[in-house]
Image (cartoon, rainbow, N blue to C red; front, side, top):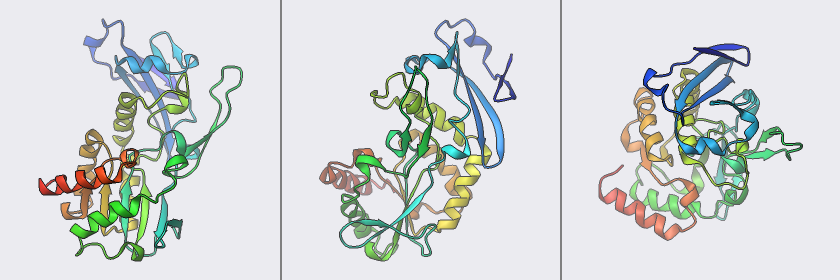
Length: 274
């Protein structure tokens, strides 16, 4: 079985034992980034796929639009500097070694969506990581101070180092733009499956490695959820990043309750989860 997406013939790698499952959806993802054009095809029977825009379906087949995973849809990394009160944009890539916060992949607020008309999906434009209600990073100093207290030999005072916000996959893997209702919350299964498919592409993993080498981080805060964080570890190993440079933290979407976050960080460190 094969299908053509965005002019590319994609061989569908579908296990034969899935053919009898009536709830199985076959998903096709055209990818055209960093000078590399390809297509991904996989099967999945999770009910979250039923919550996407009706125009994407053709029977049991779901086709993601060509402009979902292209260079124009990439959310660029950004570097910030703490001035003692808040974070302000600074030179990117940073001219000094600092902290890199890994965010996973951009979601709803990282894009400026075009209003839908006549049932069409519409276009969308990238903004920056942690845009929208998360753009006020006043809660970050407490988190970073907590980590620095445990890592004084690695990271100096927060005002002395840049903070780079980095999405390992800089594309919207949640597919929020394609939800039937944009009021829906995160469909975590879709995000995880699509993220793994994209990061499994050599060109995207290599781009992430290139960015990390450019930043030369003193410390990496890994805010990715566990299934995706596990997949990043091989990249860390390939780049020669030792474990003492990586601190696991919860994703910033959980950072509203800073006291709870610091308590959880201390418990993780006490258990040796570094």
